[in-house]
Length: 106
Image 1 (cartoon, rainbow, N blue to C red):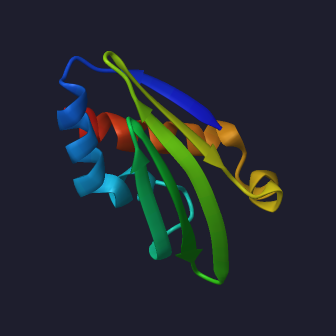
Image 2: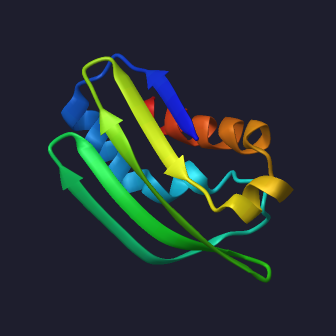
């Protein structure tokens, strides 16, 4: 799942916002209350590579991807397990992630 959002801030400020509010990007997922475990994040230039396990109810969902911060755009690419896509189609997940990203750009 890939989402691109425009912004008008300094890319370094956006990177700081993403670092400080990373978990907020995924809190709106329609899975109920989510706990994050085994989180790993690494910046390589303007790209943040990440992975974590999202725990919701009885599910333990491995999630990984990257976020690219450019001069006018932020792109997030999230790899979701195939089984999750059967229960929660991308059209339900994408708006939640997009809202989380937009919240960090304000």
